[in-house]
Image (cartoon, rainbow, N blue to C red; front, side, top):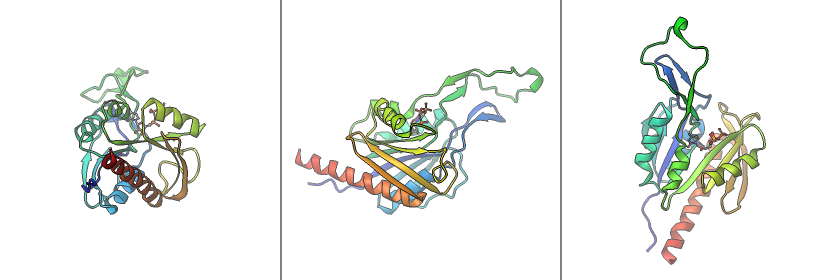
Length: 225
Ligand code: CTP
């Protein structure tokens, strides 16, 4: 019998913040718009959506379960807790790759502050999930400023992803903050699809349709196996 249970989808969105002290942090300009658009598109498809988001200024989409987090470590723990029951992970979050090695509990006074800060690498959430994945479809997102396809392919291989959605953030109509996006979707099976420039909602709709087809094909294969 075909598995007719609704697709359960885990999406991450937005930036993370890595604190030096209570009032200073390292972050990036991600707005979360692409991840939230994907969450709305997935709900429209009838999927069950868990949305793990860093600090963003966006309205909460209807019918999703929202998990607000702040740091990369918090995002890791939330994704870790939800990954095993997911059918698909879409990791749009711009996770900080570094955090200050020391997080001071009190505001550092400038007279006492060092002029350089030591950083420690954060955990790679995607790579950690794909290490233990079972049947999940895992999709990474790559924001690049040069050699888009080459860098994206490398990330797909290194992190053992099924798909990577790459965009050139240095180009107009493809950046962090705008309402439009242009995506190059690469599949581990060699597929290559250019999407946009389109609104982030339209791009999200097309991406979700693409992943829905892949998930349906996988369920069909499971039936035949
Ligand atoms: N990612 C992650 N955990 C991290 C860093 C990134 O899961 N600590 C995920 C992102 O959510 C994205 C993908 O990895 O889906 C690619 O992120 P990106 O920042 O483009 O790549 P990095 O691996 O951080 O490589 P670099 O910064 O060197 O380009």
